Image (cartoon, rainbow, N blue to C red):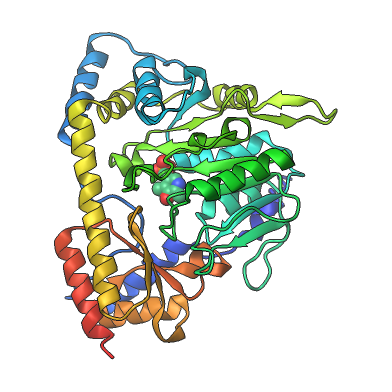
Length: 409
Ligand SMILES: *Cc1c(COP(=O)(O)O)cnc(C)c1O
């Protein structure tokens, strides 16, 4: 008898995006000529930039000329050196090449990293948060059952609220693994240097590890804000960082990301001895992963070339112009809106104290606009709604206009 992993049965049914898709399909079936504008899922809408496409074509030709078999475990040096120089050295941070682990996505990385930690580790998430952090720990058996509000036993939820600017500080009780995401999906909030310093000081004092998801760092508009947690004093001892080419260079369908595991970061074994997390993750990575395709690594490296950097920055600006229009448009229309200044997401309060899903249905009905219910990202997201800036200027303008009309008071 193949006994299943019972922890999977604790996962809450109706994952957010399938449920959104279901409701939209029902609406579209009943309103055949409606042009529904989708500001829901966090996916890019612009094509790959020319510099990246050229590099991919050239890399395909390389592979037709000679054999490119398995690449180096951690990625080709032409890419990891570009990462080290552009993402870190340029911001005054020294990262060694063997601290960078190339992968095919931050979803995988943020879901897999928990494997190198004991199942008895306690964890915290900011609430709401990217669902992968919670669900992968549920699957691994690190939690109890979910209660009626959606809180899993054994997870410390740190509410991200208007009062704390949606950037909660560290927990009071014992936590071993703390997930942080800045700029944040879904709230769009960005952590200040002071907030991150509090976290790092806490982690060092408590021998905890911070799992820092920086998938949206390229959207930070104020250069004085930290792009990497390693810009914070002491972070190399206690933090693992994840970055992705998905949002910054339009790679959601192309797949390339990386994780930095500093050699100074450690955990404890059963005898209480310090063990290098870099060694553990290297062992895990080389056992379960055979590398990012050569063509994709060439494409990712092209995002750092002079032209590639300019072209991808233009795409980020395009999305951030959408974010500005949404923020200003909705705020002028009387909605309470947050964020969208350093992230492609606007976090809005639902009007008239509607629940997140009630507002979802009304928005679809009255404005034919799709967004994402905040409650889908965690209990503290209830009463909030995420609007994504990934769309065209035209669709964004049209959506704002329809929302204004549909919800005129
Ligand atoms: C989009 C996103 C990622 C990136 O995932 P990939 O697997 O690299 O495409 C990671 N974390 C968050 C919070 C995201 O929104």
